[in-house]
Structure formats: C-alpha cells, structure tokens
Length: 306
Image (cartoon, rainbow, N blue to C red; front, side, top):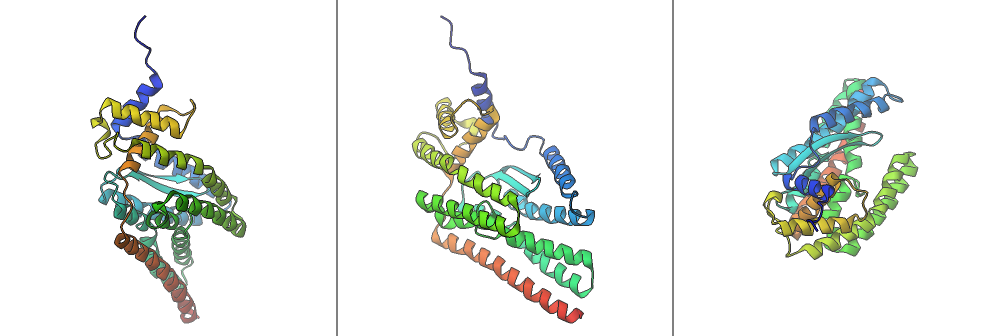
C-alpha cells in the first residue's frame, strides 16, 4: 500500500497560513470594486454630492484606523467598503499589545470628530450647504461609531478594556450589544443594523469554540513566531483547532488559513492592565466630549448666522 494521499485543501491552507497574508491579496482591487459597488447602491436614493461626501467621510474614518495599524506594526492591512453598511479596515497585530488595539479603535472616530467641528461650524456661519452636510456627516458617522455596541468602535473598545476579562462577561456584553443594535435598527428604520445584530448573536457559539481552542493550544504553539517559522506539529495543531472552531467541509482553504491566523493572534493577545484601560476609556470620553462641543458649537453658529 502506497503513502496516504495528500489532502489538497489542507496543503493549500498550510501554504496560505505560512505566508501569513490572507486578506490583502489584490487589496487595491478590492478597495476599488467595493467602493464602486457601494457608490452604485448609494446613488439609488441619494444625490451624487451626498454620496461623495459620505464616501469621503467613511474613507477618512477607515484611513485613521489603517494609519494607526501601520504605525503600530500591524500586518495584512486593508480598507474596503461594505455596500448598504459602510466601510472597514482590517489588519493583524503581531505582538498582541492591548494599548495598540485600543489606539487603532480610537484612531477612526476621534480625528473625524476633531475635523467635523470646524467644518460644521464654518458651514453654518458661511451658509455653505456642502460644508454643513460634510460636517454633519463627519460628526454623525464618528459619533455613531463611538456607541458601545459591537461591532462598532466604541463597543469593541469597551469589550477590550472591560468585558474580555471573563467569557461570561464577554458573551453577556455581546448579547446586550445585539439587542441594542436591534433597538437602534427599529429607531432608525435601518434593517441592516438588525441583520448585524442577528449575525452577532449567531457568532456567539463560534466565539466560545474559539476560546476553548485557544485554551487547548496554549503551550503547544509558539504565539510569537512567524507562521513560516512554526514547526510542522504546531501548524497541525492550529489546523485541527481551526476545524474545531468551524467544523464541517464547507470552508475554503483561505478561510481555514484565516482561522489559523486568528487563533495564533488570540494566543498572543493580552488583557490590558487597569492603567491602560482607564487611558483608553479616557479617549472614549474625549470623543463623547467632542460630540457635545460640536452640538453646542453648531447651535451657537446658527444664532450668529441669523
């Protein structure tokens, strides 16, 4: 009897994992195509100038995340638009430092709020409708992202500094966040947010399996080694854990490789100390204060403009 046949999906997943880059192949093409699709759908019920303003605001927000990722040494970084919802930036931390993760989260909304205040106040004072709309968009998008609801920046920040410390707290927070998204969806008449809330609930079982897999991998895999430097046994362990997180034959090799990378990332992730947690929460409070300043500033500018 000859040697056992190789599993081509397994071998391809191993190859992609060892490259350490799964999501940013043709990143520029993904950004361009997702932007075009986002714009085409948005133009159905918005004026072209409003779509341009919205795209610019979303891109600026994600550019803040992306720039912070690059400064913090993240790998596999990219920006893409999500039709009907918004945009996103993704990347992988190579050292698991919690303060860097918090900085990346705050780097999206805070610059947009800082820019939105003078743009809005100037637009109101100068009776410039485009500037006024841009100011409201900058403030609205970034203030919304500060809400303590996963997967928004504010929700992920609160999850990082408070609720990641215990699995029950994490699952409870995500369940409440899903309910909050549902309420917000009803309030804003936005069914997309409702879908996100349902999807968040659906991820809870996989999240529990992910945590169990990470606990089982501790001591068996070098969390800080580059994927290409891991021993064959360590890669095998990651692949087996990835199959436990998402069982079944339906996942493509790239998805298996991405799960393997996520598992190794989770192994190196550290819970922030209370000093770092308070500093990051201070950043969130600063964002909330900027929203209040913007509201007051816009009201005063309207009075002055007559």
